[in-house]
Image (cartoon, rainbow, N blue to C red):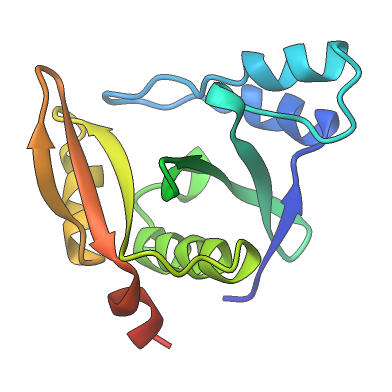
Length: 155
């Protein structure tokens, strides 16, 4: 699929805020985008000051990708539109978002990381399929990383 990544705007945040899930994750934390909008920010900031992107396929928002940088290491957050969850799009969506992040931010560090709830078994499985490995275990979550060169090889 050909995805289009657009910096988060308030109308897109409102659409994503209405997404509801079954399972471990019930909703996406969108309040920081609304706070950023109310503060008059030109570029809306998401949780932790991340840069968020609404991801389109054709004319529909199919997902959300968020990029953080901590100690020069990229960390991602993502969500797939619930109507597409379980339809076999997760890996392609994840890889597209990783490649976009690498290209958009000229990212050349060794790895990209994320944090996932231990109980979110489908997500953990997806991340492992994409090449992520667990490098730290917390009480209720895993810190995972994937090597940047592995993502670039997927082209």
